[in-house]
Structure formats: C-alpha cells, structure tokens
Image 1: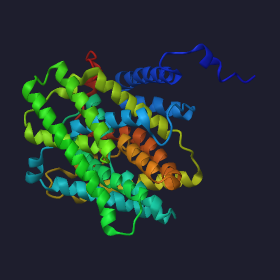
Image 2: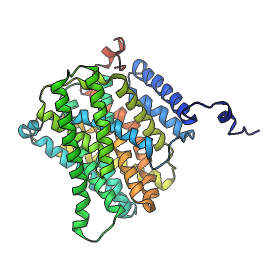
Image 3: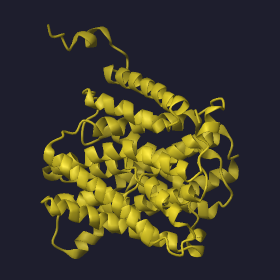
Length: 415
C-alpha cells in the first residue's frame, strides 16, 4: 500500500514550513556525521557534510530547485563569499614580487586546465558551446574545500600556503571569465566589443563593490576591536550586503568578496582574528553550503555518455593542473615533491563551480541541460574525491596535526 504523500504534511505543520524542518534535520545529521569523520576517522568534517548531502540527493531530497535561485542561491553565494574573503586576506601582493613564479604557476595550471578540458570534451564530440562553459567551470580549484580541510587538519606550511594561494587565484580567473561568458551566452552577439563588454562590467562592478567593502571594513577595524563579537557581526553583515549588491548590479558576489579581502590585506597589514570570532554563524553557513552543493549535484542523471564525459573532464583537469604546477615550479622556491602535493591539494571542485554552473544554466536555458549533465556529476565526484586527495596531500607533506587535534577537547567551531 502506497502511503499518502500528504500524510506528514497534515501532521507536521511547522511555522516556517515543512522544507525548513527537513533542512534542519538534514543539517543536524550532517553535523553529527562531520564530527564522526573528524574525531574517529581522522578525515575533515567537510567530507562528512558532503557524504550526507550526497545521500540526501540520491534518495530524492529535492527541497531546492535547479538552477539555484532565491534564498538557496543567496545562502550559497554568502557562504562562498565569506570563505573567499578570508582567502583574499591571506594573499600578499609583495609575495608575487619576490617570487613571481608562483603567479606563473597559477596562470599555467589554469590555462592548461581550460584547454585540456575543452579539447578532451570536443574529442568526445561535445559541441564547443557545451565544452567552453565546462572548461571554465573546471578551471577553478576550490579554496572553499581546501580551507576547510586546512582548518580541520590544522595544516600549516609552504605546501598549504601555496595551494591556498593558487586555488584562490584560479577561482579569481574562473569567476571573472565564467560570469562574463554567462552574460555573453545570455546576449549573443557578433561584435568583439560586445563580447568584451560583459567582462568589463563583471570586473568593474565587482571591483567597485570590493572597494566599498574594503573601506567599510577598514573603518570598522580602526574604530572597533578586531576580537569583539560586534565587529564579527558587523563584518558578516557587510559581506552579506556586498553579496546582495554585487549580484543585483551584474557583478560577481564571490569575486567582489575575494577582491575585497585582497584589498583589505594590502591596506591593513596586521593579522586579523575575525574568521575565528565569527564562530557558530560562519560554521553553520559552511555546513549549509557543503550540504547544499552535494545535495543538488547528486540529483543529476547519469548515463554512459555522461560518465565518459565526466571521466574525461576529471582526468584532463587533474593532469593539466599537475603539469601546470610542475612547469612553473622551476625557480619557484619549492621542491618537486612539494609541487606534487600542491597539485593534489588543488584537486577539489565544489561551491564556486556550482555557482558558475548555475549562472550558465540561467543564462542559456536551451544549453543548460547539456552543461549541467556533465558539470554536476563532476562537481560531486571532485568534492568527495578532492577532499580526500587534499587531506592526503597535506598529510604526506607533513604539514597536518590531525592526530594531535583528535586528542584535544573540541573548541567553539569544532576545530
């Protein structure tokens, strides 16, 4: 006997709706599983979050629609923006003056990734209009996953710093080009100037919002204590406002946050403690972001052709990043062994890739199915596999202290 689907809806009537109840229980389960993964399996919490989201998506949990829109899209953009702002605050431009080969490594691995994925997919007879967005999506490593892995394993060292910097830079390229290409898809034209205009608009709006965000935060740090709870709340509110403004004006909210963090680092050289002070609010957004990404990505349909395209994308991407990092390693100050672990740490692909995929799905509805059919499974696979590879890479590089961490009592954010 098939149960009436309205049965639970008649009995469970929370004030915020049944979807809110479902998400609350799902996040509670993800928090529990993430804790188990970290404390008992010595793996990062983010892997547990992704596993729960994956199982929920495979079991048909469909409280979010694709492409993302409304509150779900804003929550994902806000979570990504917070982490990218932190990543931007780690990058010191003087480092590139003293060691320009790091920037060369970044450009090489990003460029090789784009061309390798594009030609691999074209070789599989995917049309260029599908292969181009997928290549741009694959270009970005995931500083979102990598920073969570670093936090959960307490990693520190040259491999960790270089991997985060290069993942952040690849995200900068992918967000700029991906957002601009989505606008071109939405308004196709035959003029070169009309093709360049979206790039200038995305960059211009994002830079303007980033400058305003940076100035507001610098003023806050001058007037308020960096360790104050009110300062953390103010900063979170400013990032949320910048996220909404950048998206509304045609820029990229995560790109604006990333550039804002980089600008603030140049103007405010002293280290700031705001990420730790954000505490539970930031942790909850991170948890929601990873569960949302894996839940949406797991709902994609698989087929033989899709599996082949996903395999080609993943293999081409991993090889291209390894070759790019290796070619740029000459005179970069890192050993070849460190270069191998850096390329492995850049394997994850997660929330940023999903945001770019959602932009293409909204801009080109007629091509959305073909793009999403390959992008979503690839994101799911590289979120899970990438988190494992990044953890193993940092561990083999000797820069983690996971065993020591497991013996410590939990802190406020579970780290």
